[in-house]
Length: 213
Length: 257
Image (cartoon, rainbow over all chains, first blue to last red; front, side, top):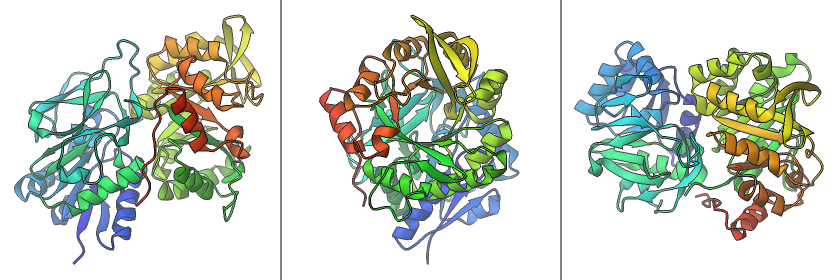
C-alpha cells in the first residue's frame, strides 16, 4: 500500500513548492500520495506529516491555531501515534517552546528551546539568505548521502536556540552556529528549505519518506 | 560559510521569455520552463523573472509561467515587474514565486513595503532600486523602467526600504546597465554598507572579473546578470569557477540523482 503524506495547510507558507517537491520525489520512487490539507482528519489519517511555514513565528502559530482542531490532530498524529514529522523553516521553529518576536509567543512545545532574532552585527546580513554549508551529525537518517559541507538554501531572520544539544542534527555557520536541522524521536525539522535546495534538498525529502523512526 | 549567489535573469513577456540564454538543446527557447530547467541543471543559485508585459490584461500568462516553472525547478525564484497590490504578491506566491520584487510601487507608496512584509514576512520582499549617478557620490532613484527621476537619494532610499521591511535590495546601476563595463562599484558598496539586508548587484556585467568585483569590492551578497549568460558568452559553471579562483565561496551544485 502506498503511504500518504499530509502537508498541513494553515494559510502560511509555500505549500505548492513543498507539495511539488514531495510529489516529484514520490513519483521518482513510485509511491506516496501527497495531500495538501486543512482538514484535521486528513492529518490523523496520513502516514507522515509535513508542516511548512514562512513569515513570522507568531503569525504562523496564530494561523495554525485558527484551523479548528488542527493542533489536536497534530498532537494526536505526531505525539501520540508517533508518525514521522517534518517541520520546514517556521514549521520547524513552531516545534519549540516559544518564539521571541514582537513579544513572547507559545510554540507547540515539542522541543526544548526558543526562537530568537539573528542580530545583524559585525556586518552580518539579516535575513540569512542563500546557500550555506551544513555541519551534519554523523549517522542521521535524514542526512543519508548528504555529508558535512552540503549547501542548502536558507532564508530566515530568526533561529532556534535549542534547549537540548542532542536534538540538533545539523548546524550552519552564520555569525556563530545556527540550528539548521533538528531531530527528536519521530520529529524532524529543517531551518533551510529542502524544497528549494535542488538535488540536495530532494535527497533530504527522499530520506524523510524512507525514514522509520 | 554562506556562498555568494549567481542569479541569471530572464525577461518574460506575455508568459514567454523574450531575452534569455541561447541554450542549444532547448525544445522551445521561448518557454520559461525550458530556460529555468537549463539554468537549474547549470547550477544557478536562484532565478529571476522580470515581467515586461506591457498590458496588465496579460498578467495571467505570467502567473501561469511562474506556476509551470515552479513545478519543474526546485530553486528559489524571484519575480518582479508590475507588482502593484498585495493581491498581486499573493497571486505570485500562490503560483510558486519565492520572492517578489517591488520597484515603482514602493516609490509611489513607501508604506506598501511595510504592509507586504507584515503580511508575508520580510524575507520574501525584495525592493528593486534603479539608480543613476547625479553627482560624484550621489545617485538618484529612477522608476517606470528608468524613465522617471524621483530625485530620491538612492542610499537613503535603500536604508529606508530596509527599515520598512525589505528583506533584500536588488540594485541596478542605470549608467552601467547593458554597457558591459562592469557594476558601478561605488554605488554598490555605498548601498551594501548602508543596509543590514543582503544586496544583489545588477547592471553592467561584461566579464567574469566584473562578477567577482561586485562581491569583493562592491560588498554585494549576490550578483545578477543577463546578457553574459544570454548569448552563451559564459556559462554559470565558468562564472562559478572564476569566482572560486578569486577566493569567493560559491556553491558546487550536487549532481542530480
